[in-house]
Image 1: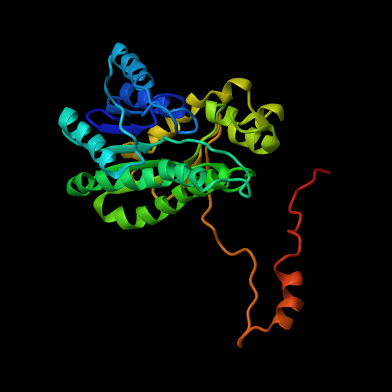
Image 2: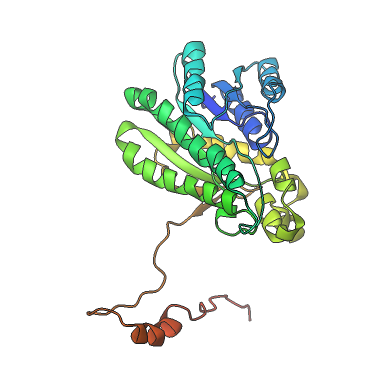
Length: 304
């Protein structure tokens, strides 16, 4: 078992992708803290049932897990999640942040609270749990951190809050990987796929995004079978990033949708203009349409 003896915390593990990750980690030998506040998709409400059911399933299958119901949008609460792992299992080796909520709305209709609540769970939650876990990871010079991002951060409509929070996971992964490398800690971000209840709630006005995020587009295009939409398909690829064999993978963005696994490139300049003196508006008006906004060349190779 690839995670034998390791101790893992999975946030948002009461369902969807998070529960699949927690269950597979336990199957691979890890002791798992199944964290889930039991909230609705919009972050309201609380229930212990979802986390308890996952723990019950893990323990029934011979794994080791405990439930935790703390909210990750609070720094002190995240400290209690770490303490639960420390008290029950003696430490923390792996942190997987899958918790999230949605409050979709066009930005011109979005309230301040709808913006703040989504960032509180996704972005602040990532900081809160990582910050609390790092003293232990740094002290032992070992750690694996995986953050769930989303292709929504690359293209979405009606999700400015969610897109911003999710693309911020990429920034944390890339910056954190550089800061934590000397301590033996890896940090990666994942663009997951699958038809989760979160994806199902995306309005039909964002049909293309809904199909991209879930993998439906590839199913409709006959490039993947329908069973590839199961969100549990993300688990093995996410868990792999938490193993010893993934020690050389850090600061990366990896898509785990369906049967696919893709590495996303770092952002690099694709076009460039230069002057040896200051720019004028007139020069920019002349050069930008020709150099920076002209269509990409068609590199498609056509048969025959």
